Image (tube, rainbow, N blue to C red; front, side):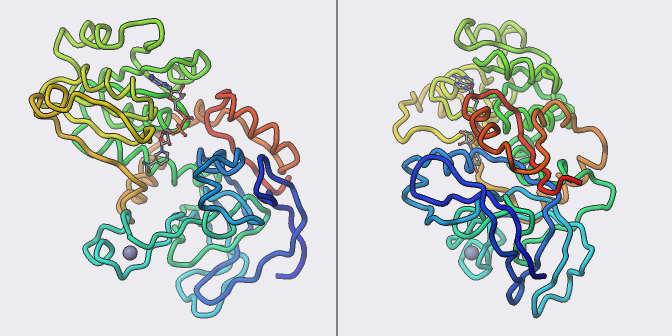
Length: 350
Ligand code: NAD
Ligand code: ZN
């Protein structure tokens, strides 16, 4: 397909990004070109926008940003036989090698040679984008594109929440940012009760309530451990899900989880965190999971079906919808200020 398109470009190694007109890319061997119907902003995109230390070490501008996406295949590159023009797809954003020890033992989510769209190559904050066919995920026709785009971060939330039994389990979720909010939706849909959420931001506590949290705590004003014990008849929660990356939340959660309970950690902490391992993990016989990315492809099946079941309360999580990219700077600044859940762009106005 020839022509021009608008794209949000990390143009320079500095704060911010630019809305630019560029050529519509051509799909190479094993790739497809999609018309982007919806694309959502991830915390990683914000790091790239802010040009933090991680972004400086990893990103090579100029590069189109973005990786969470839903779109329609409009052109198929050579050698692609399982995707066709008109297919409605989302994309797993981790491109795995299929050859390393982890891939060959089924642990694709920890592939040693992972590459990521919008990080290691051009991304999807554009009217059209290239997707490697091996990373395409076919969506059912009726799924709204903004939900289809959310499947990628929902995969993180599903892997965190469903890393162990959850139905009928008392659960503490620390952090109700975009991912924690998705975690609340998954926990509620999966039968966790009560779902207790700790979140300092008033704006996000309100979102947590709308998504369906049963109890909500402000960790800066209340004693999280005492509140959790009061709610759980003194036992503490069965499951602690960490979505904040705040060392204090980790400590409080480890104190609030019942001995023998389960801990799944998604939030990324500063490098050095001090924890009383003996008393908070070992003597409590906790089951602790590190969560990274999404299991390929089982998590995608779970996510797709959970959306199709109609049980996931995603509407309150999608706080900002933009037609076109014109107001992208406003979107990023609102996200930086913590005044959003998930933000979605519909690149084509009609
Ligand atoms: P975010 O920064 O938007 O949300 C974090 C939330 O935690 C905020 O709402 C913040 O107010 C809250 N918070 C801060 N201090 C707290 C405390 N003491 N107690 C409870 N809550 C507190 O981030 P996000 O985009 O929702 O992502 C959540 C975390 O997941 C981040 O740490 C991110 O880096 C991490 N992450 C991990 C992976 C992975 O594969 N492991 C993937 C994506 C994101
Ligand atoms: Zn690999």
